[in-house]
Length: 425
Ligand code: SF4
Image (cartoon, rainbow, N blue to C red; front, side):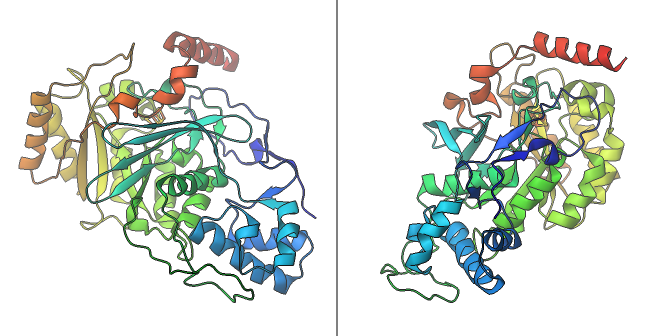
């Protein structure tokens, strides 16, 4: 029987290249004590866990299929509610397994409808999730790491050191929790219940209409391509047709430019790509997005041009935060257009008015400047919408909720970085 109470974190963390804060290695206690959390396991993983617990292969296959459907299609967290599983088996499952959720430390709703959660993992590590409703869609912004190594200077998360990568279960758990909070699980009979063998299904019929959560962006805390395997595992679950069933066209992975991983992301995950560009020359991008010192703009744009699946119907989104007198001149806009054309990129530019926090090193460009910048790009035939700031009253920008409680100062970060440099000789 499989009963590991802890999983080694180091086994889950891929090697992170470049200048980084120290990664704390240790163990992630499994939620539910000795019981195995099924969230985040693949279909085969669930089947394997059932077999290890003592079911024969045939029973494990059937029960695994049923449990998967209940977890990801119906949002059920109690085995007792899995009504097509024989009643006698449900306590047996409850003794050995759980269907976990992150703990909600704080939940806020903005007056514009944006919702933000501060979540805690089983080991107490905190991370954030934001839901942004729009007229025609609802986008969940999902975190991939606790903290971040990359220290982008306009980003509040960048002021926190990386604590650890989130597991696939913790990533997909955010989507499940959002569906819980939005009340979006179908009620009624199981539309595609596999091989139902038991009684007492509730009355009514499954309806999938009117969903609020329609899109996912891997744009919360962390750099998803530094946690590739767990992000990939989580998104495969999110895209599985017998479950959350979100189309890859509705999922966007945002990277600061981890060039060596971009082709793999396109080939193995296949979701839309967004790139945090934010500057068009080396000097400014080195400052704003320090990863640029490792993977420069030319390499990044070449990787974008080669991104599998990018075309005019599935454009690459370039995120561009508008910083006063830093990256917002007419010349910057023209250079951005020139670069996009030089690399023949099917591109869209998202202009993001900077959302400052106390002590932030930059100011937001004026609305007139942002409009002028946008117009120059539009005039070149490239879409450049200005993002409306959302949830400012609840500090919905990445990292702000968590850091309100725990943020180390930039001076502390500089000290840590200097110590690390010294240690490396
Ligand atoms: S913008 Fe993203 S990659 Fe950069 S520091 Fe913030 S969370 Fe990390």
